Length: 179
Image (cartoon, rainbow, N blue to C red):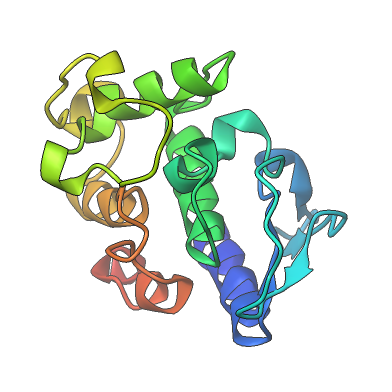
């Protein structure tokens, strides 16, 4: 499957301490025999603990919440982008198509729910109260075509808290890929 190949490529990058930072459908090349290649490493970085971070990474629609909020980030940003790509493969339109960072966060919270006050990151200039209080949406209402295993995997890839987000390697072991 296409998604398995994308995640395998991302897992390979992460095992080699590379964060792509600009995963989006345009950077996933598909050959005539459906083999996948990840392209455009212009924003890729070797990951280390002293990594100087910039928030101007990842096309807006595929940007993880931690990047949108100006927080430190690492390999989970690529998994978030993979989740956005997976959702788009089912939906045939972008999952989150905000036109500004605030609107992008609002679109994200409409689906994954607004994090509780306790889970809202400290030292963030954007106040939690500036967003509507959404509860988590059933992905089936947004993507009716998705199977229940696909929905489960997608929700694991789209966790607000990057420390709770599934890794590319863990995603590859998900039962979705056994269907």
